Length: 140
Image (cartoon, rainbow, N blue to C red):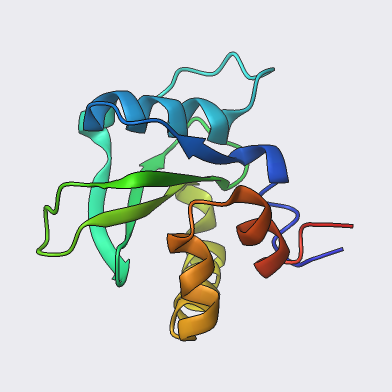
């Protein structure tokens, strides 16, 4: 089992069809919460964005109604128009409970180290959910 497993399942790594940015973010939010959660969900406008690797953007929000960190990954092909100067090939969506700040910072550091490896970062730009899942050790 990977150390990403408590936060992310392969089903939460999505290949996203071309759509408006808000539509893409709504899909990522829904995937992060999962199909069984009835908790109120943030709106795309509630998410903050920041690049975390070439062509990879973190979208995140703090939520006081969550019991654990929730993640999803959206892979875009073709890439989305650049907002920070580089076309976006992948979004990593993180929804963080206020009580999990330290855990989130540790998770973010692990993700940053992972994406600093060009081969592993290329998996996120590949558009292939299976490749990203394998990179994160989420395959059996």
